[in-house]
Length: 96
Image (cartoon, rainbow, N blue to C red; front, side):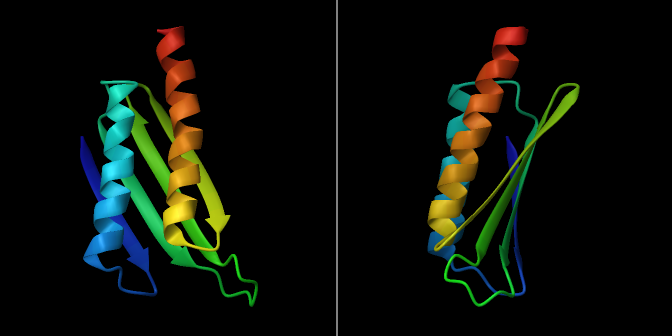
C-alpha cells in the first residue's frame, strides 16, 4: 500500500511520520485490497488543547474511506482515526 503523509503548516519529525505509517499499514491485516492511503496532519487555529487533527483517507476498489479525529496529540488523533477506519474496512470486507 502506498501511503502519503502531509503535514500542513508544520514540519513533522521522522518519529511521528514513522508512527503514522506503521498505524496505517496495519490496516492491511484486515483488508488486503487497500490501494493507497493519504494522511493529513494539521494544527487547528483554536486555543483549545486538543488542536491537533489527523485525517486519513483510504482508497479501496470502488470506494474511498475517510476518518477525521481531533485530539491533544497527533499520535492519539492518528490512532483514533485508524481505529475508525479499521471498523469501516471490516464492514467493507464483510460486504464483499
